[in-house]
Length: 165
Image 1 (cartoon, rainbow, N blue to C red):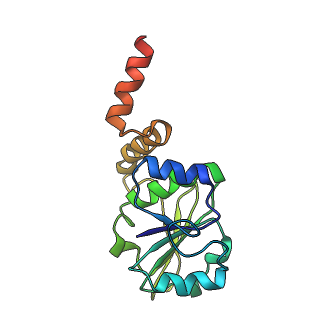
Image 2: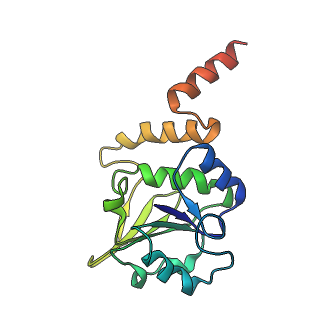
């Protein structure tokens, strides 16, 4: 289950709905409007292994990690939240619920940083794989998806149709 903080802009929430990403937002489908930061962690522990997305830097603390949830601090602009949330959920290190549990993750344009349960130090992950190639195709798909709301193949067809008109 993916949970969006109340501080996620409505237009980003609408994009996620359009893209059929499963999520609930605090104050809309989950929790209650105006929940304090101190209430969110106990609330997350009552849910079935949620991944919580926020733009609040107060959730980027190693001390907050727990096996029952994942915290994602989106250190990006308001208008890029949906794109980077989608991108994180497709990243090979975090593409399943099991891989995310027990992690506190910071998402930025440069890549990902994560504290994991029992890890001695923060781990850093690039948007590009070790060979410098595999994630580039995922990036193209993400960019097409972000711009058009369509999978990369459909977006390419739409673009070629538009340019031929």
